[in-house]
Length: 170
Image (cartoon, rainbow, N blue to C red; front, side):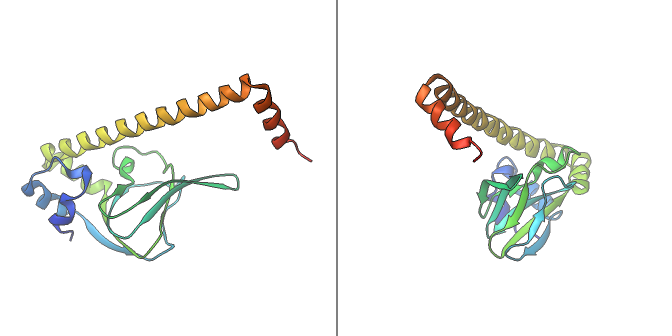
């Protein structure tokens, strides 16, 4: 079982009281993850979210032969939370970068919480909503940057020639 002290550090649970943390902690399952183990793959079906209590987990996506690291998560971080509220496939791959310890909350347990502890569940969902809003804002800022770079390439003859030359197949 997860220690409530560990859970207090997790942003996702920032609105929960000590009593609510106790109720939640009884629903979590502790799991050791050795370095290099895939916790889940991009495109796989998910029904669990994870809390890192020790170690580091890399979140990445792959396109063709390229890998893009989206995040390197540390202790007190969480990932996979979208699996609790949607049936869509995983959007990224999660791999333990070092020997790690995580706690797992299944979708089934979360749904039980929705019925038995609706206020607790509402507070978790509020935190998820805040996190998703932050991610959308960050994505918008990144898109703006890429748009401005792209515009500079299109509008500037030297950038455009350089881009064309660097992408010519020889």
